Length: 347
DNA sequence: AATGGGGCCAACCGCCCGTCT
DNA sequence: AAGACGGGCGGTTGGCCCCAT
Image 1 (cartoon, helix red, strand yellow):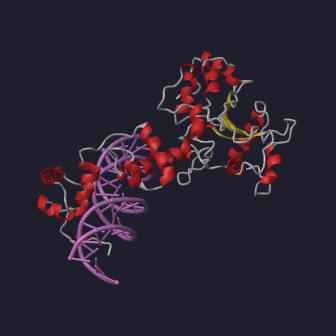
Image 2 (cartoon, helix red, strand yellow):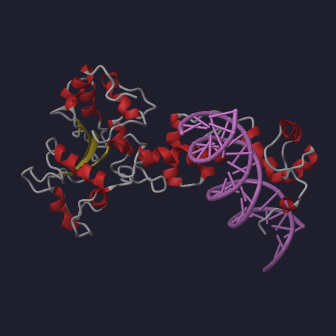
Image 3 (cartoon, chains in turn green, yellow, purple):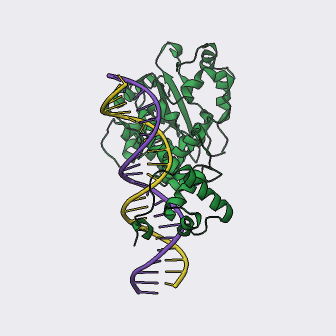
């Protein structure tokens, strides 16, 4: 079982295909179709096994193949699909017309894996690779951003109990741990418990939040290791905040575009996102938002904040209205962006 | 100019699964 | 029922090319 009988035949050619062999195979398939692959080599006059012919046709000779480098959209789609399908290359390829599983697999292994690593994402789990320094950084930045939030779980100086302290007894883990992983767990628990078990307890009038590297936010939403795993706080919310790359980018925000859309050179040490969930309204309503924070002179005293964006789960209203305020320049941050003539980051 | 290391990618290998006999 | 066979898939390899030294 398993091994093909043709593989035992010693006379068959292996290795790269010559133009003559390609022509023979192409002519044969154009005339007769491939039918049974095992009979193709003999009929086409090739010293190859059927499998080799099939592979050559599928990966190279097929007329509907799209050649050339992968587009950004294709790359995003591959990452998104990989997050759910894993290494099922054929299934991924089925979603990308003109691309073969082999091609996608090669692209993944040679390019995407490296890019994910650069973004601090584990290519297997699609979760962040957290180093100790990153954790320290997250905590530090969170403490800065508490100025903008009503209450943040990392804001001990806000004058009200941190949401974490209030809510922690409701959750199955019992030791307070400042690691990002625990915060991630915490926010997931907050969301899922609130959503699925809404009548059993009520959140206090506190938003909860956590911070994460901005680079993760510029990442395809469904593959986002933190945001993507929440059905409530997922691509729809994020897409409202950051229109996807395939859509036109609002002119008022042009200066931010490079920082959001380019995959490289985003200085995550200066640019952090903070996701928050406001559960002050209960009975199915919830707000969710994203803050962007930069610790430099451009936004000194300001954050690029869209934390007030609400996605009302009761009415299913899209969270567009607040976003519009940022886009039409009526808030200080968008004005600051309009006055910024150079891209925020040079590439 | 030589060389070696790394990246890329076409092709192979080994296995699984479904169908046929 | 069981073995043979063919198609398909994912992992791996090997060779070519480029670039740095």
